[in-house]
Amino acid sequence: MSSLAKAVTNAPIIRVRGLRKIYHTGKVDVEALRGVDLDVPAGEFLSIVGPSGSGKSTLFHIIGGLTPPTSGEVIVAGRNVSAVGDAGRTELRRKYVSFVFQKFNLLPNLSARDNILTALFISGLSSDRFDPAFREIIDLLGISNRLDHKPSELSGGEQQRVAIARALATKPTILLADEPTGNLDSANSLAVLEILRGLNERLKQTILMITHNIDAAAFGHRTMHMRDGRIVEEPQAE
Image 1: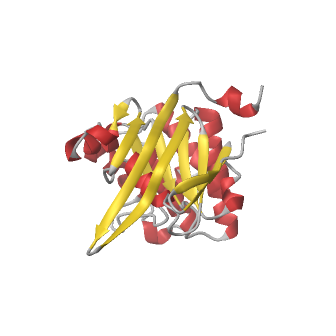
Image 2: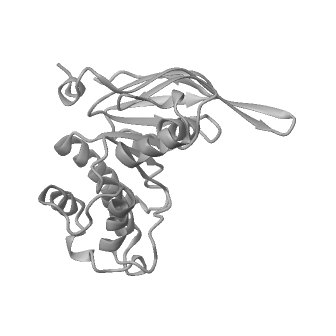
Image 3: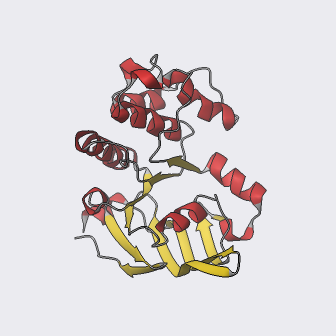
């Protein structure tokens, strides 16, 4: 049995069928996705690699409920994202999906702790304290002694770790990471990628990461390649 088979269950937490997305820009229609099919089992760490314009960011945004598809079916955490409106996609983001972006997007006037707590406040969850399970995540991220510092007092790697903690504070079913090492040097990039892999291995956190960096992609169980709005290669895990 492969290591991937041990790490995940059979049921896909993300299921995409025939996904198309067309952007209408003036007189020109841009077809960003051209019939994408994808299954992501619960507990998998999947990397999606492709150049700019390949459609990976559009796929990411649709799965995360940030934009609606033109056609096709998208099931995320048992919710049919392709059949709901703005309110349904907002609920998906509040309850089931969290994001980590290339830009840390931390509030500069708040401490690391308060930046993390904003995620709980926005989701309507208790923000009085971190529960023991989340304190384990804080320790895993290595920021326990940095919680009272503001973003300007943190290194780039520490800021990204705070951003990851904020994303995990609501205990999302799925963590979506968009070029999470894009603003980091090589040492901090390696540290963040190892953290993501550790979160997946220890907590069975489902992670979907998009990147242009094939070396970064290798930290996942599986790498999917995209080009011109299509999946062009999907190597199997050994």
